[in-house]
Amino acid sequence: MQFSFCPTCKSDLALNLDNYIACTDTSCNFIHYENPTPVVAAIVEYGDNQVVLAHNKLWPPTWYGLITGFLEKHEHPDEAILREVKEELGLDGKLGKFVGHYTFKRMNQIILAYHIKASGQINLNDELDDYKIVPFDKVKTWPAGTGRALKDFLESRGYEVEEVPFA
Ligand SMILES: [Zn+2]
Image (cartoon, rainbow, N blue to C red; front, side):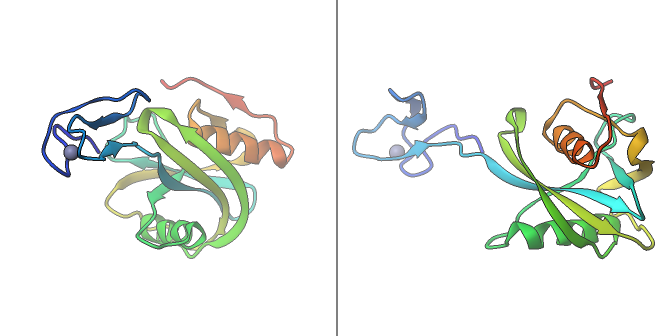
């Protein structure tokens, strides 16, 4: 979130000595910490040893990625990721192992990546307009938080993975 004025007292904002955006009124304590936003991401294993990569409507045509989403208020990440898989792919997933946490600096996000097992009929929600089912030994990963998570996961399963730049 970005502010033009202090959201507490409407005074001007400026960088403080710790380099945070802060209120210039010394009687006001507002500091804009810009804490990272947690995001859950799913490596959806569909059947055995293949992953579902989905295409968001807003992305360039060649980009396919993991299922991701924000946590709802008071929601545990383990629940959030199963909810996102259900909402975006229409699949009832089974929670696999937690893969790890990854930073996505451009968006100021911290990504919590999970392995999810799922099967059944895929029904995309309206955020997505396409998907691919890719065998684990054919996956190429991308240089961002979710791509690194996928690479770590595949390497933990014994695959050699090539990371390719965004095209
Ligand atoms: Zn203020």
